[in-house]
Image (cartoon, rainbow, N blue to C red; front, side, top):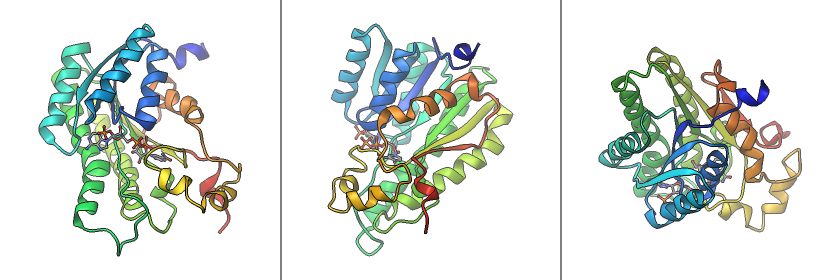
Length: 258
Ligand SMILES: NC(=O)c1ccc[n+]([C@@H]2O[C@H](COP(=O)([O-])OP(=O)(O)OC[C@H]3O[C@@H](n4cnc5c(N)ncnc54)[C@H](OP(=O)(O)O)[C@@H]3O)[C@@H](O)[C@H]2O)c1
């Protein structure tokens, strides 16, 4: 019974930003559990490699070039996904960028635009396009998972404007959770703490990393595998009555004492 709840066999899941980091890892995990995957990112060579390894292992995946800052590319991604595997059961808005350790005095307008368009505006544009797909296909059912971050609620110097975009993404999740159920779609977010990827490298490989790690009650940075259970919860029927939840996975980091 419990196994059935978390069963994702045959689900069609679209993942943005699957060329590295979380998206790349999620693709492997979801394929292993029998989902059919539509993967997108700008680095098509990496997406192709990911698709090949999944297919070699007996999984089911296709890849498309995707620039989440480009509306046409988003529409093409959803259309391709539909053509390849039919109705999309779950959309994971994972693509994201971080411009490096910068303060508000160090960033310029291009940094601001790149971060906000990639991390925030794209989640709206993809969610809208996905909702149109759900309606056009007469599905009356859908599921969106946004990859936010614990910087959505705790302040940290030098993550400007990344943390602001994640605060917006969490609030967007909550507002979509009000508006999307009329289309049968529920919307939740996963908010990981710090896990070593290209996005977090600048912080986790800095001289301050040991000091930073000490502030996490569980005294370690996260690993990809720590996200397995929470992700499977959100994409599967096990979370069927969850809507507008932000699932924090951070070893207790946001509870750290002031
Ligand atoms: N690592 C952490 O500790 C941490 C913690 C909390 C939340 N997160 C979030 O997790 C998500 C994934 O980040 P990550 O840590 O896995 O970093 P990552 O390895 O740098 O992955 C980022 C992904 O986003 C894609 N991307 C960036 N701009 C894009 C665009 N314009 N169009 C399409 N795809 C784009 C990248 O692909 P291309 O460059 O090939 O396009 C890449 O696949 C992000 O939303 C990040 O904010 C990370």
